[in-house]
Image (cartoon, rainbow, N blue to C red):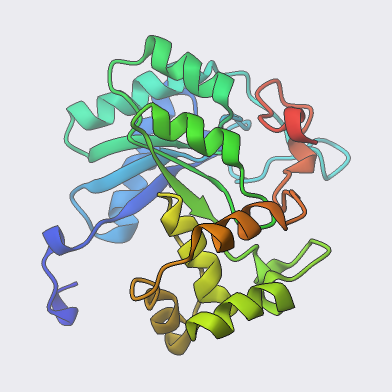
Amino acid sequence: MEHLGLRRDEMFIVSKLWCTHFRPELVQKCCEQSLSDLGLHYIDLYLMHSPMAFQPGASIFPVESDGVTISIDKVPLTDTWNAMENLVDAGLVKSIGLSNCNKHQIVRILTECRIKPVNLQIEAHVNFPNSELVSYTQSLGITVTAYAPLGSPGGFRGKTNLLNEKWISDIGIRKGKTNAQVLLRYLIQRGLIVIPKSVKPERIKENAQVFDFELTPEEMHLLNTMGLNERQFCFKNQMHHPEYPFHGDQ
C-alpha cells in the first residue's frame, strides 16, 4: 500500500474463513494466517466462505475415496459464527458476514448471534438475479455483494454468454456502454455491491465507469426477466452436505 501512496484506512480489505477451518478452535488460526499473508493488522470484512464445513487437514478440498465427493465436517453453523464474533472482539476483524447462505441459514445465525452479519456475498447476475434472497437480505439491513456479476464468462458453464447477448448490447448502444457495464449497472441499481473479476487494466477501468448513466425502469424490467434463471456455481460435489444451501433452486 505504501508504494502506491495509500493509507490503510483508504483500503477496504475483505477475506474469508475457509471451509476446512470451521471448527471454533481453528477459526482464529485461519484468520491470523490471512493477516500474515496480507501483511495486515486487521481485516475490514471477514466472511464465512459457505455454510458447509469440510474435514480439516492439509488439503483445502478434502475428498472421499472416489476422488470427487467432498469430505464433510459436521460443525454447527452457529458455533463457527460465534468463533467469528470473537475475532471482532479481539480486533482482528472490523466486521463479519456470510457467503453462499440461504434464507433459513441466515435466520439461524440471526436468532443466535451476538454480532449481526453486515454482508452476504452470493451469486447474482442477469442470468441468475437471485431476487428473493437479495430482497429478503436487504430488508434485514444486511448489504449484499454479487459475485460473478457478469455471469462468470471466464469460466463459462451456462447456455448463454451475457457479454455476447444482442439484447443487452442494444441497451448498451443506447447508453454508449458495453455489455459488461450494463450488467454491472443493473446490479448497482438493485442496491448490490459488485465485484467483477479481471486481470486486464483496461477492463478494470471499464468496469469502474458505471456511475455516469442510469437504466430506465423498462430496461431494468427487461434485465430482470430475460435471463435464464440459471445458477453457475452449484457446488455439485457438496450436494450431500447437510448444510448444502441450494436444494431449493436445483
